[in-house]
Image (cartoon, rainbow, N blue to C red; front, side, top):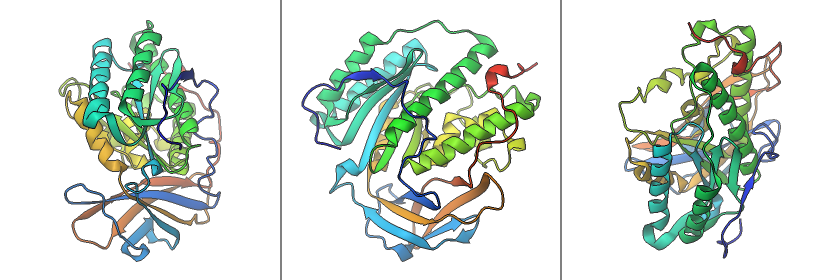
Length: 359
């Protein structure tokens, strides 16, 4: 990335951007590359670790690291890029206004001097809108944010089940476009989506047929691998007040999907994708500013590690990743899984627009 931009970033539709599954060039076809965050008990980034301080487990088996590198973002702030995404597809008018106020407060903190390059995007009914370039100058970003307020129009959406499926497919498509764009950037990328996430369609449940499960599983495989390969950690910051729904409902779907027959719509929820990417889901009531500040703590030092992908016995073979650190009172976080020998899911597939509504 270059230095902070002198003028205001411009907005552009990203409809032609590559999907999240597009090759990023970050990791080779037979290497698994991870960005590992290590924090002490106070939540601060832990520096100075060596390769022998980390153990990477792949399906419970320790892997030999072929690459280990500490990335000090204090010395090189551009090693981590932050994209704040306003979700205007799944968020109501009042909440969108609140999001903007909270983002504005964030951009004005510390005299508008940001610790890392930040850019702003919006998911809208008319497609993805993204700033061109990034900046560490809050005033520049604030000027760009104001342009979103004048250009974006709220469109009337269909209600009920079919409206929910429309928002789901629209959200996934635009997240794919954002992922494709961010994956081109060097270093680690934090895609911070401010919104409640898309509809879970949990009511469909057992009425999903074979085609729909294959479609869901294909989405999971694509996003899981593409986010990791693109060096992207996904975050979900929920702007709503607690109590309107169960904010922890998604946690019942964090186990990971090994086979397509077990795939359900909530398995590709924003919150679930975020947790599996090595990012976080933050629900602090109506405190969006506090959630942004908590997420920004993850922009500190990280460790880039790689190991050779094992030979898979079958297409889309599920692998669970764990990282253990040989230090007391520390936690490590990274992408929690990947699919080896990833291939297009076989058989007929159908997006949820063809799903059977719940009875």
